[in-house]
Image (cartoon, rainbow, N blue to C red; front, top):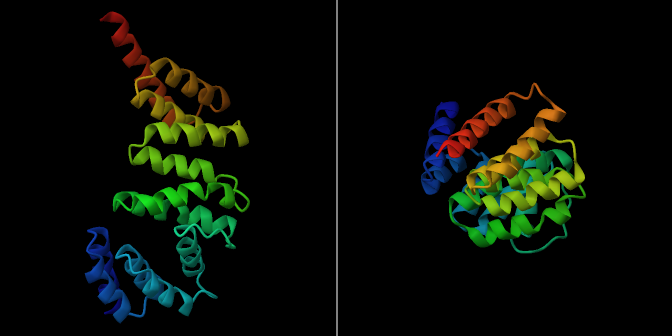
Length: 206
């Protein structure tokens, strides 16, 4: 019965019906999920109350408490490599999807702090910005990631895809070619390189 209720709550959550999801999560004593719903309903006080309940044995709840500080520009936090890897993109994406732009901006601005715990943070931010259509910003963060991890094919591919979407086909091809030079079996890059070459060839024939 509890599993069925939680699955129902998740469906409400995915449809952004956070109040309905919250009621079920609270009933099933799912403290982390209840706190997240409260946050997305912009009730930070209640989010904190639920996350504090199990922060010691729940990395997701302790991360949520960090997020509450970051969105309020409080950088006095402790977080781990794996928390950032697991949750940063989720929260940034949720804030952008719900048009909580100030919170999203503060999460982006926190990259310099979070870098100390996970140097991949700039790539994570770039990936979310790309998927939400902020291509210029995604390029900026992909380039910053590449400065740190100059042989990361995924960061170069994100860069290439964004350059393509803003119309810089030549730059996009250069970037994806660099991916192929690093790893010529990286399938997403193989497919994207083919698409780019076909697009460039079409433009030459016009």
